[in-house]
Length: 249
Ligand code: 1GP
Image (cartoon, rainbow, N blue to C red; front, top):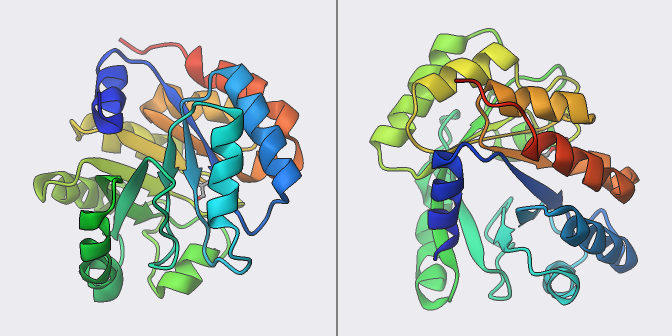
């Protein structure tokens, strides 16, 4: 089964999923190893790998360490075209649909397409929506785009709907790594109500309660990075909170 099929079937069953974000620039190999071991023990669903830059050329080694210590699928979450590796299993082919920077909407994708065509990577298209989160974030600066204001639910809903109508396979509500405020709960709820494709939410989720709240509101995949960089022992508690998030009927 493809990774996307797996995401779809878990989503249809209402099974909430946790993706652990690993930024190769921020972690030593030994820390990646500890995250991978804890993630495997905790039943984490996916690894997302990437960051805003890639200063240290550690991407391949990072993926190798994750693969040596777990069987969790590794999905590239690239900040730019330099962050590609055949060692991963899949790639989130992100189009920054909240912004109006043509490079981030389609330009970079044209450059990456022939590489991806040759690669064994599963390509999963994803509408990436940056939401205002209290202070300016790395994504905002690096992408040269404005985030959607956090109180403009209608803009967020219509953007996500347009993304689905364009054929994108998932929508990602992003507050930015280390965000001051995570995605507002009413925004997650209302975007989810207007979508049939899986919804991802991440940025600034630091406690199991917050992660669970986002899952209950309608996020199918919760992404957490920062909190585990400081304490990989927290993975088990977070995975439990996401996997056991009560279903709303
Ligand atoms: C960032 O959504 C992810 O792209 C995760 O954010 O690092 O704040 O958990 P944190």
